[in-house]
Length: 282
Image (cartoon, rainbow, N blue to C red):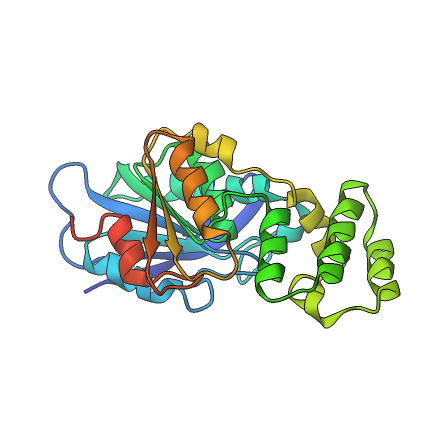
């Protein structure tokens, strides 16, 4: 019978909270059982990443993995504020989660794997480049910058050229150090087109500052620094990510990187495909 318990761990001065789930039965003989750290996507994501992680957790537990997931800083029971930093700070948190799982009795520290979804893929890539998990799997993670990814998503949703031009002006404003009030005024003068809502509707001053810090992040240097195998998993019908270009870029960035497309899947590939990529059933 599986067991789970609340855990806390430190990432620098920030205290994070999460869930550690352990499979039933005795640990394998030798160094211990394998484990997986799950890193959620953008926004105020908790240890379940909405509804995405529970079925994945269940499949991993059924295959004998220990599973750790955590509330993003400033979410749930975790301290701090994810909007006060950037992807580097979120990677610090994923690195700390890897260390916490490696320290768990009965877990083989050399057999801990890392999974990151969407924005969490960029975070997991940075953490994996630092901390060297046994294996890294990303899903729905663009191989382009956040600014380019969001523009792609707006275009796929049917944003007209003038809306895309307004988006480009917002990105340029961020690069120029323009504050939230001036950026919001730029949008107001343009009539606040509803087609830009997927990008702007929930943005406030703190979120704008976070978006500006991350908008030109390039994930490819982190891929080139990986020392572990990397599987970039995509739903073939993902509307948010330039799938073909991302798959080619990641697969070509490092000799141990591969891309896998799941036919018919969207931005959240099914749990069984993620679990298979992480080694469940091997």
